[in-house]
Length: 169
Image (cartoon, rainbow, N blue to C red; front, side, top):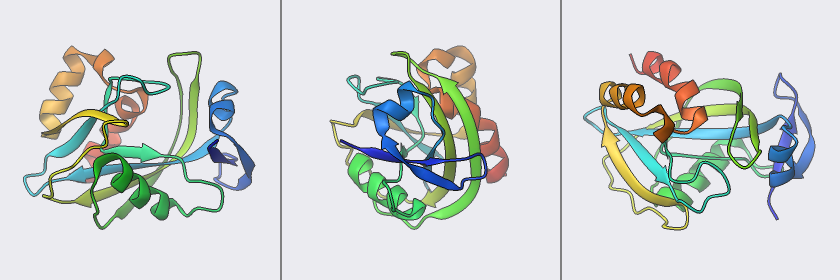
């Protein structure tokens, strides 16, 4: 069973809760999201595995996760980048992002998300239990695709995208 770090709206720790219970009850918890860009400025997107407990088969940022109790944000981000995409990279912290989004299966993401960027031309070796596909796209191509097929992207990615564009400019 996996646990998440519960927090308040200022990211102060409040305790831990089982991950699925936190999503069912819409409890605010910590998350990390990683955005890996190649030397051409293209973002590495992943398509989540179809069998994921929410947002299956949707396109999203390179990887994301919840820090385990007592786990540092950056440690969680590096761990999950390796577990999901088979990559190692130096991370650069960008900004925090508080959001709430209703998901499929009557779940809610209510997260205090810590956003990291990385640069790498290493090709990913995705874990098929986590990722069904990946693609490198320019931010303008992603923006165009999201306008035509927003249902193909995760809710958090759609909420974060404009902030990512600003941070990259």
